[in-house]
Amino acid sequence: MTVESTAARTPRRSASTKSTAGKRTTAKKGTGATKGTEPELVQLLTPEGKRVKNAEYDKYVAGITPEELRGLYRDMVLTRRFDAEATSLQRQGELGLWASLLGQEAAQIGSGRALRDDDYVFPTYREHGVAWCRGVDPANLLGMFRGVNNGGWDPNGNNFHLYTIVIGSQTLHATGYAMGIAKDGADSAVIAYFGDGASSQGDVAESFTFSAVYNAPVVFFCQNNQWAISEPTEKQTRVPLYQRAQGFGFPGVRVDGNDVLACLAVTKWALERARLGEGPTLVEAYTYRMGAHTTSDDPTRYRGDEERLAWEAKDPILRLRRYLEASNHADEGFFAELDAESETLGKRVREAVRAMPDPDHFAIFENVYADGHALVDEERAQFAAYQASFSTESESGFAAGEGV
Image 1 (cartoon, rainbow, N blue to C red):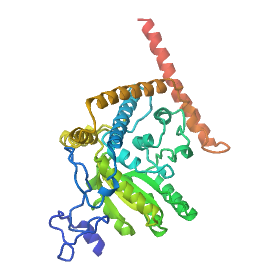
Image 2: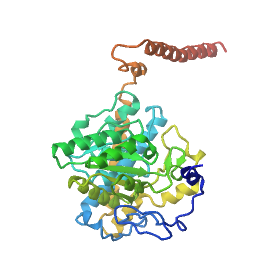
Image 3: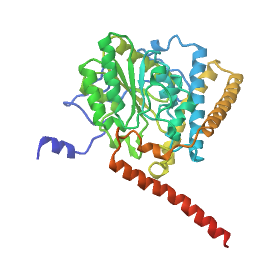
């Protein structure tokens, strides 16, 4: 038996008992902890809405105004309203699928508002809050989930790439784009979003390698929402995700993903590093997926209510509201106006989706091959027969009903 296989079979000890060469080591700021130390979490707002001082990251939000704070709150509230409306539309049969961001608003709005217009975003399929920050019309975004378009927006119009369904592949695109920026001598940066599950993909590891070797100006923003569908994070990795960056030669940091101020500050810091030519950064936003993985998932089958309730107490929107109220940065009039705006947004999205045409079920067979293919033709015929079977069954049922 090799040394490696023996190590793999050794039961994992808790962080409180683990040590390196008989001695604990202390991690440098921004690089993550080493063996034997507890993960550091950057937090500027507690769940109770109390401001926490941080010598390293306070400067990135030092000049934020009450108006900007209200803007962050507004972004999160409207994004959640849009997300809830999309979930409802899917349940009504208006959308084919929906991947909710419920609980991840702070991670997305905080990082999204840290970006400049000339920065470029490579999202997954859940970055609805970042899309909002980049100016993507929610109605256009939903066309993809209704099956009437392949994206619905021009990526060059707001430097926001189309949603990527293949897990982790967008990190390769982001790395290549960032390498191009460096070659052009521009001072813009790139951010790639992915989840804890995607961090296990080989594409992500390859992206880390290339970005480090070529010093690419890219921020890898990992939203660790604790679950890769039904697989918990502790079954995906032996160390905190942000520590993986060390092995590739660049810094990683874990931020409270339910703290919009902390996410804003840490992302600004990481983007600053990229612009200064200091290379990539891995940001792990430690958050929670409050809802299902998608509308085809049932999270009650693999996680309990206690876990969900514990995270609901850390709700990102409630946290910022408490801070706004305690600081007298917002009054009841502001919240009432926002409630009305939220309802208006929901109505607009609902009407826009219902006005969309029904999707062409056979469009999935187009553009697979330039000149067609016998196998695709065969699959199209099989699908046509499958679709026709529903109308046949409906007609048979109606006729049977008439004869009763």
